[in-house]
Length: 123
Image (cartoon, rainbow, N blue to C red; front, side, top):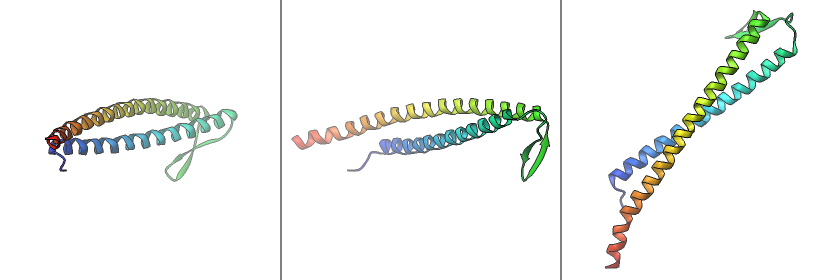
């Protein structure tokens, strides 16, 4: 049985959306790892006092920075990462909802395509 062109088009869109969903999921995982690393770094930084020498990485270099500036930068980075995570979670939710809608639409179209053939066999 040959799949009608409109259903084939829907299947192609569905596959593209699946790939997009996988990409978003991977991005969320990466951001979550960054959140955990930043939380851990901030936790370690908070265990020290303001007189501790602090360095931050800039490419292949370590550069000495002010303690308070380092804490502030880490807190800001953590807040940004958490906001990004929330945004991506909403994006993932929208993509998954769209996938579900497309799946239902494709299934309905396939059932509509198969139904007339079943009727012809009964004759």
